[in-house]
Image 1: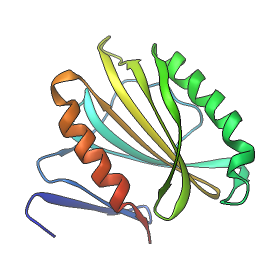
Image 2 (image 1 turned 120 degrees about the vertical axis):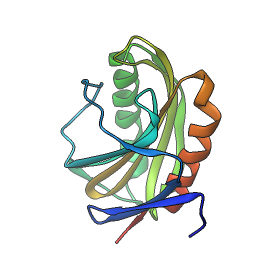
Image 3 (image 1 turned 135 degrees about the horizontal axis):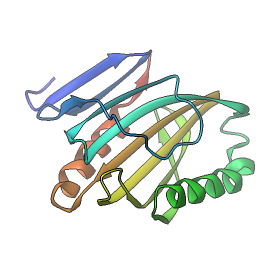
Length: 159
């Protein structure tokens, strides 16, 4: 591990993120669909951060059926961005996260402090388990959050 990288290990997952980032507690309610089994948030501050979370889905989503669910997932994401006071600007983009099929979306939102933010969400599926990576940033920290978000996505692993 290099000196500029920290590693999170917990909840049966691991990922790396910039060592300069801190663990954060987000106090105010954010737009969400469902109740997370757990969430971990790291970042620059409570306006620019990455949250990793796990949810349980009613429907099993696998590499062989993700295409059948992409339309409904995209509609849910459009609704989530609207609920957050913004709009979805791109997606879905097919990705993998931790070896699982994933969909990426990006857009804008308004955070609980009424600040407009850039937002990137990746949803990965392992049957009825959904892993979410949500990267949010304000203008001055967008580049740093983008780099850290890519690091989390590329190093995410389920143990």
